[in-house]
Image (cartoon, rainbow over all chains, first blue to last red):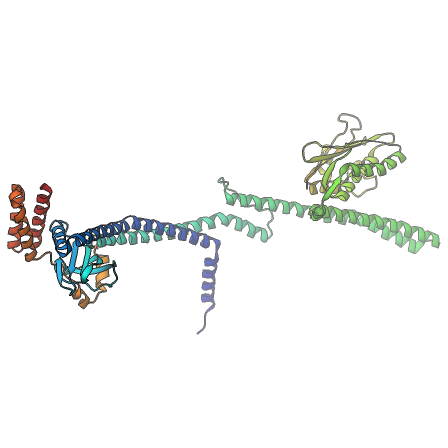
Length: 471
Length: 84
């Protein structure tokens, strides 16, 4: 026997349907609903038929104890009289009694003979008795007496069985309706889940097909599905930004590194073809090595930025004193500023404890000071300050007296390889502020840029690096 | 329909077992006579309406409607005992 591919596909579809989250949620709903229904049915049964059974048993037991007392006080005659009296006023005609002697002969009661029931003292049993030729259920209690006599007390259980029957029938119908409701509810739940997830699935499919602009549509309900959709959209925005960033970096690398590489190649080629002596050739090679070192530094800077942005160094976070870092940076750049006729002013508390990557923070501060030294004209002043602007926060500010940045350039500062017009003539690759920005993000902070002296002819630039002191 | 459970209970019982079930004898003419004799002891003290009720019971038993007769005699006995 062979299975066709259509059959196999059908079974696969059924298997996938049974494994789907929608089906499992729906099945769970149906099971819980039916379990609640079953619990309700049990409570109803216990409260009605169960109560009636217990009442019948209590009445039989009390009746039997009364007759046992009569036996103790008056013997056979007293029990016979008591049974006769009780039967005579049994208007409901439910009572069953039987008193037999040691030979099993009936002495009193309304049952013609002893039923076949277990011969254990005080035992209960559900028996059938005949009334007017019709077999009816009965609840019987056997009580042994002295001298081989036996007493049987019971009740006709027809009414109880009727109630049980009615209750069973009602519960069966209720259960059938509950099953129908559970299945309908489960189907509705599964469909609702599928409907809510369809938009997210369609978006994911479109993105997988290459349309990165698609986003999950959000409803006005602001429920868990909207939260999931919002998270997906935030993730997609982030991926989009990263993709744009990677594309920008690729373009920048291709554009900005092509010139120095081409220049190095041309220099080597010229030296090879037209160097008059070994000394000229050597000089050309030394210049080329310096150019290649510069290219290597650019790649190192890029790698550090990527490392910071990826958060890979977060595992190496440790407590350190920011004040000591600033002291080290001020020592190096103070000497450099002095060489260029600049003045470095510093101001920060004795201790500024924080948790983070000390080397990265030092690199960021160095980049800011490097820019300040580069752009401040001779005789100018650079200000390096730090403090605690808010609980759990640290800031480092570097102000210079350079040409500053236009609002448009400030908005783009931090992009890789971006260089404002005034800086194109100066050495650098346009990666310094990119690294500062990445270090700020690594420490849950940010980089803010503004004019150091608003309104002045040379407004300068104040770079304010905000960092979280707790990683 | 209300007898579904009872039918299910006894349908599974074989016929010989149903025949073997003990029989209630408190619906026989003899028992009717026994109740009537009991009422005789209470009759002098019983009010007229209870005597009438007992007479109706005896009459029904004599006409073969034993269950109805027994029910009336039992009611008469119960009321008469209550009045004592």
